Amino acid sequence: MGNKLFKLVVVLALILFTFFSFSGQTEAASSKFVTKGNTTSKVIALTFDDGSDGTNIQKILDILSANKVKATFFLTGSGAEKHPQPIKNIVAKGHQIANHSYSHPDFTKISAAKMKGELDKTEAAIKKITGKSTKPLFRAPFGATNSAVLAAVGNAGYTHTIQWNIDSLDWKGVSSTSITNKVMNNVVPGTIVLMHTGAGASGTPGALPGMISKLKAKGYSFVTVSELLKLKPAPSTGTKYTVKAGDTLYSIAKKHGVTVEALAKANNITNYNLIRVGQVLIIPSKATTPPPATNVKYTVKAGDTLYSIAKKYKVTVAKLAAANKITNYNLIRVGQVLVIPR
Image (cartoon, rainbow, N blue to C red; front, side):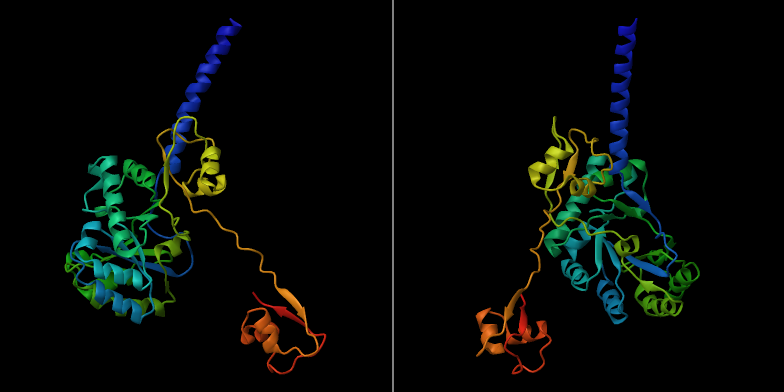
């Protein structure tokens, strides 16, 4: 009887372990759904969805530059391929870019494999044009999401799915005044505003200058979505690894020369023991620790000059003087100890 009870306990334990292992991974990989920033500070993120035509991109960029405002652009891969130069301009101006799918399908109506294909194709297109990644942010076409979408998007490396709490309705072709009023009447700390770059959003360029001015007058400052959510940039490397039978997070980290902590963080893994065969992991860049910034010291001898010491240690006179707070290059004394900068 005791032996049978022991076997039953073992079987139940294995079933529970399998269940929780699977559940834990789904949760860890799921993309976080965000409608606004969780803050009491007066900050706001202006976001622009770019579709097939991108008609107003340059006008929008000029206005943002004139007002020293940074924004976030959610890019479609098909649109970027049709107008690559404006996409390059977005990045050149220092704005954030993110993934808005390749062909703008309703993600709730396609398979996980097709979702991944849409995201990967866009990422490849944007990287080819700009050299930059769209990760870790995704915006669903039509704002259509559910748990399956969030799971698939998270597994593809997009940790946050960005919605909005103010839809400017510019896509309906409404007036600049209507867009401005929509924003000003609903703005709260942490607001994410949805706008568009295409010809259909004809009122957006006209609305932006006044809207920005009014928001500044109310004490608001402008941030990118990642700044709003205090996210770190995605790993600069695109290296990926598919988990095989017998792998552990520790063995994978060791194999790729990274820490277990860095590997877990890059993949939103909270339980180091829960990885599954077939799971695709992002391998973060190896952190390089700079050598200690120790400076050599030199004691001035008879006949030395600042110039001869600088030449000896292959540094500029100006740098040597600055490191020792010397304003007159001719005034050094025998026995004086100088710091030789690196």
